[in-house]
Length: 488
Image 1: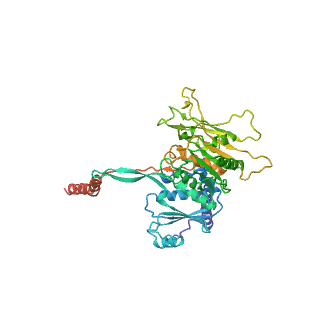
Image 2: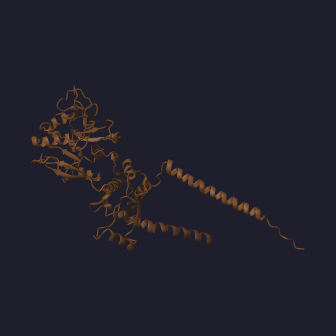
Image 3: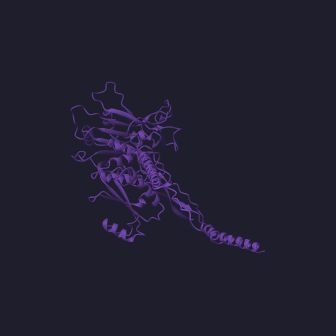
């Protein structure tokens, strides 16, 4: 008689097991969701990729968190480019910091159809319109950044036994600096305006020589400040659209008429950035009495320090006060050239509502004046700031007066602006002068770590034969020997 097979589980037990599996699955999913939520909100992000080893600066995060417009970023790029992964990783960091940024990648080499749409949308007609980063905030507010502007390079000699050969070696990546500037420009359609005084031997904004100010002007542009030359001849004063007046290294004295206009500008609540030069020790500019009125004394001498110098003429500035214009420089240094001391005026009886003067940066304790080398060495201030606090019930035409005076001008010229944190100081100084507190954290270029083995063409050919011939041949020979040994 055949034995009847009994079911292993009752229907009730089937349902109980199924419900248990379903409940456990839901519990695991809930734990994963909660862990992701808590991690995104309370825990620090980990940067596992070498392309994202640099976190976004505080200044960039301030700009991203203050955004009000949606910005669509299109990476119109050849994805085989060596810097493409770095650019994508950086844009993903921007995207992760704010939901107002979206990122789209269009490879114009592999996706010709989508590339044509982008070319038509943004009127890309030139043959070199490729490898672009396009920031689009809508309403025709578009910033297009060529990829080759993101990387600083230097010439490096390539080993070659027959002739001199060079390659462009990447040394720094300026992606964050450039992208944040583009977002700032899109968020503020009307940039602030700075005027650069001319007519007294000052360097030029378009001068690319060692002592010109082309890089200075570029740094202002990256902070979304337009710069225009200004001459104060005639009856016109400082223009009303002047948000910042820059006077850099005048070597000739200003006229009484010009000095009167600058004095009126400051009384109206203007913002002034002055760079003196060692040459003005023997040729006063006329600005010195005006600055003394605001509490700053520019000493008619220059500083030297035998210990904090590399060439005997430069001076490393490593000490800084607590002030928004220099707080970010605490772990850095400035490289100044024969700076003049810039100190606060020691008023015996300060006037009512006296301006607040802060000495910002100081030389080392072994500094001496060139005119008094036998004097006792001590630390001297070389940069100072002035802020005129508002008077209750009174308003000035341009706001509250702010001034920064530096005892050197060469350190912000094209040659030395890359020394130490000189370029960053420009950003800190102008953003404090313009009262843009969200931008007081600077963004510097990120160094590029490159792993590359340089060989001559003959060495490359030897390696090619080794990899394509010798190594596979050795494997085949070894396999043949094993086959013969097994046959025996």
